[in-house]
Length: 261
Image (cartoon, rainbow, N blue to C red):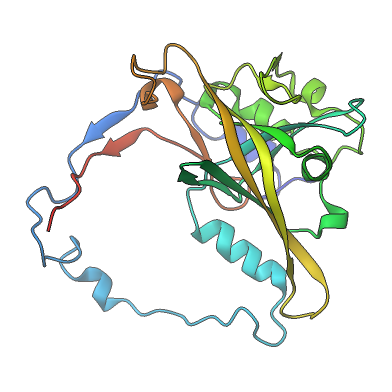
């Protein structure tokens, strides 16, 4: 059994318990008196630091080094917990993707990236390519362990729904089920899949990007306002992906008005 960080159970046991009572707190920004032209708010400390230049294609540099660098530096990342159904309808699948985000609102568009070629897609993307339907579920604190369990390398045909213990809820315009525990879910239909070719090994396909259109939104009734246009952060308690096996939670937030020229 893979044990990251050595004896992870021992390390985990030494850490403080998760405080489920912690609520989102809004604070002032680091420098509420900031004005145009002031620059960074660290009194020039960051200007005293040097940077290391990294060539992603440097001879001898493995692509895994780029992977580790990017997932530890591009943080926090939203996680799309994607539900799909096989073309024959006999197999259901649920898996998390942290190469994911919303990119437009009219129409509502989302992107999901996978670092594998199309013919080696993990089950969710294989199903998406064949059926052109999915549900994107957002992850909250109250089911993060169950969501993480769906990342298991189960063989095709084995349902992560059972492994996770999460609950299927009916969708309206697509066949895949929603995650009932999710505060927000998006029924989606595939727009396009684009494959990418390796720079280090020309001709070798190494990844793909799926563009998905949201065709129906679902938000828990205690998390949505009367106008149905705002999700309550304090109810959602979203979970994000960090580097390695780390996840992040939102406990502090700040508001900074957008400037007018």
